[in-house]
Image (cartoon, rainbow, N blue to C red):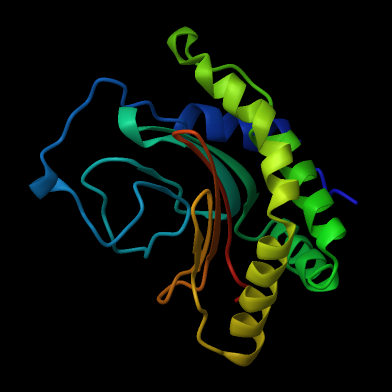
Length: 200
């Protein structure tokens, strides 16, 4: 079922070295924040800038792990521009959009290769605990993830407006400007976010 898209050592290396940025202990005044963009994202308009946070500009699919309280995030790139992996993700999402079990399997597989492995700072052991709960949360939200992916595919294919989903520990949004899908699973205070760009 899974594509194993984050298994490429070079992509994981680039993500770890260039894009996994910790802001533990850093505080910024509210006035300095850019309220129009997420602070840890692959979905960023090219001429935009973040006052704080982390972004990946040449990615077309990624997962992030975020601790908003500590202003900390870690981004794992699954696909970059021109490598052919993003069309594989989009095509699979199209094929499984009416299959909740298939969507659950896809998301868990992608999470296993992107956010359920790897080390974190020793003072952030709670992230490992949150990771253990993520697969169960993905299974629990199968109807919402199905609705989310169906809406993303309709907005991508038919240019339909996308109605965001915000249901407590799950949210789904499609960027009005970029068209990126952003699916968020929250375990306690930790957010696990799957992001993918629409096909050009």
